[in-house]
Length: 128
Image (tube, rainbow, N blue to C red; front, side, top):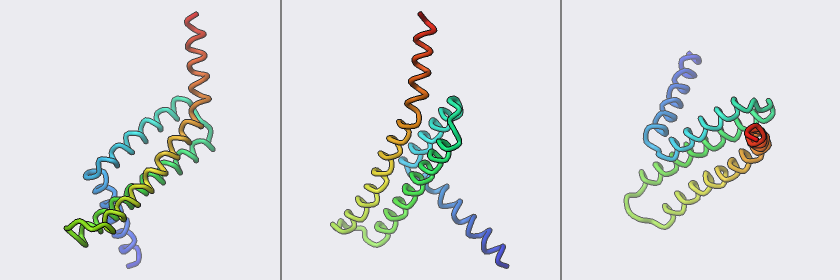
């Protein structure tokens, strides 16, 4: 019986992820960035530690985006009219995503810049 409840909860969570991917434009942007980062990480053969940092960063951004979407829907459920506190709740949640998205870009630059430097240095040297 417990196993069935666990499976059901996993299915509900997967449905939530599907909703975010299907209906949230920013989630699709994050997923496109995720694919680009994973391809670059594979091409440059980054270290295991760098992979772990990237995966944690990707997971955090995507999770925050899902939480942001949940907060927005909850606020919309509570009120149809404009209310300053409702707007603030939505803005705060969006701000949390933005802060971590900026941090993730900084992390990505930090991880990939040495690889890009070597790549471009070797490319320019090769053509001389």
